[in-house]
Image (tube, rainbow over all chains, first blue to last red; front, side, top):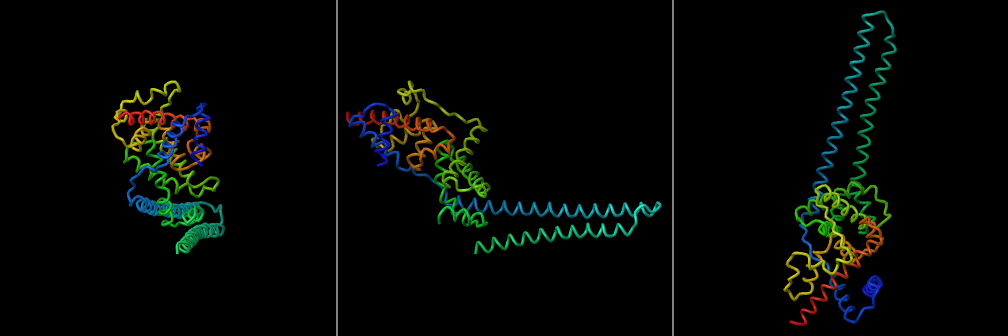
Length: 136
Length: 186
């Protein structure tokens, strides 16, 4: 059926009427074209890609964790330095900022950091649980 | 497993499902690349890149086309980009008035084909066709894709796709006619 339609379209394109011989030649050609050529694909091709992907995922996760750890560390260091700096100023000069104001600000900064760490761990745990559940 | 559940499973992080997806479409990808690149090592390397890309882009796949068409498009475009980068992009066009002499002008052993095997004869002549002709013949006849699907994969206008397909068949039919005549005379 498909071959007949193909032949009609081909004839319309060439804009000539086909002889019996032409039709036979095209039929032979179409049947040959429809035969799939053998192709050699290593059986290890799919598992190799899957392994590569798992490796990449682990590498990306490690990179992400390192970056996150680094940024948290940086926040803590900067907070400590800022605290130290303000404390030094307060001790050396006349009192501009009340120490009672500094304490809640520091506590807030520490709380935000802790919350960020917990939040990240929570999201990751939830994601892992979901994936584990689906694959089982 | 149907494509929708397969994609869903892969998106949920199931690596096994992705292996299954690769197995299902590796033939299509290898064939698509082989129609454009001859080097076997590069074909495998490109096929790997294609599946990595498929994995990366899968969250954005919305089933607006068939999964096979979408994967085919990635394979086709990735190979074309590779060829562009490595300056191996030689897409021959045949002028209509030059078609008669196309196979004659080609310097290759198939023109003096001694084999009596029609399949081998046709296969050899398909390999000699310009890249786009070969690729469209494959997508239409082997993958049984429709014109809109071929248009989506190759990015060529539908008129050009049809034109290449018909001209490729005409060229092959003429060669086949000569071959059969020779066979009868022998």
